[in-house]
Length: 311
Image (cartoon, rainbow, N blue to C red):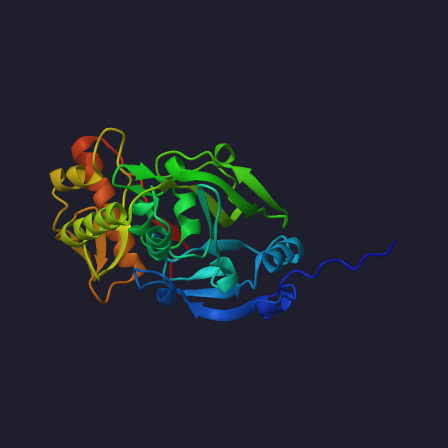
């Protein structure tokens, strides 16, 4: 049987012409600075906003295999380099990825559901155990990939299962054991995309939920940079140690590069003071890694995810 060979993309071919027809939207040359909390970064060659789970699965089954694809969440833990991101950036921004379903002792949230929006459901239905999630910036799906946590709890403590789609477009439900969650990381394959997550909940009083939510909010407001362009904790805590203490000990608390600087409130947070480039921020971070290694013989590991190419 005669087969027409797949035509490799040429420099003159817009990427969008090579992609399958979808019900969602394709956007070309979208500034990633608008989609990250740092407010920096080059353009995504194409951004794909799926209509729903099946639309995303269709895209993954039918896209050319040699076209790179990556997923972003709310952009709160992300640094996009100034050269932008080649290929397709997927963002689950449609309302179909923001549904919430209550179960017997569980709550299931779409991957695009914002963490901060969870508090309304906790208070309305007297559901406890997930208050810490409400204070983590970004969306629910992103909190699983990094096993996000704070205030003594992390996602692995409360997740029951997740609905995912793999790189071949197959949708399935996986258990917490399949996710391989550990401190600020996971072992599930890079081509898995979280569609929704089911969390375990516990009954609690509205007063207790409100108290915890307020304590968490006040803690972050007083001890971490607030209403500033930052991506949260820059480096993971080495086992048994605190990254901020190592950074301070190495004399990095007042470092700056271009428009990027170390936060005065918390030295494990890097700040875009207004005119930073992604290069400024990454250079500052690498400078801190080097100085801490020289002073303590400990190599800090980035917690912020870095994507894209240099300009």
